[in-house]
Length: 306
Image 1 (cartoon, helix red, strand yellow):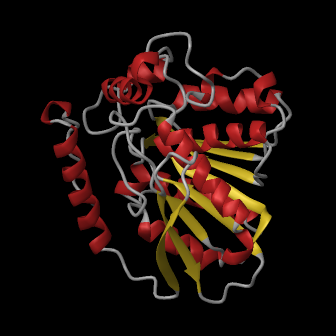
Image 2: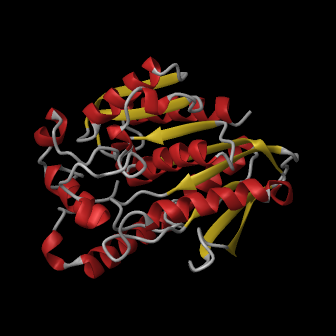
């Protein structure tokens, strides 16, 4: 089990990113190989003609029978850290288990690139996957969008944007403790102050970096902060799975979002795990709470990817 460092924002974003990347690489180095999954990196067009190309990683399992379902993955990191290859083992394991291609997107990070740049990159990557589904061996009507933490928030925003644009069909969304509310008002957001997990201060830092001049205003679009959506805003979304821990700062916003989805007529599964903090299953996957989380998540993915 890796040691969880305190979150220290005073060292600056460059050092934070370098430290977290080093920690992630050390963890990944201890994990077993997944030999039946091949990876390749590709560059795809950006959101607009003037945008730079976007880097993505494709995970392709041996024994894949085309056309199959496909998974579009968006990494977490509070909108400010993380990378498309940061969940390599997870993506390889899922690709191997479900025998489906997975595509992971490298989106631009705040504060250098505030909203809407990260969302635009995520949507552009999904749009490319949808348009090129046949070359990936994927049925374009069976693409699930998933992400964790900030990636879960970007996944929710991307799916909302895709519904409204009408270019891309999404079969389901699997939102892992998604970061979706910038308003800093829920009890759980204020309760979680422990320095070794994503807490109230970290959340303010991440949202202010992501929203830039929009932060603290009433002008934040629902694509940026999906928790701002009304029930009517959520109608017509695909089946949704949300999981969050009892001790997660995102607990209340995720529960409320699931409730609004249900009220909007969206088939929704919500799993709240007692004793779990933000991303706790990543630090101790053998803990009883982690086993419950991972089992529920795999069940949701299995249903979406069949």
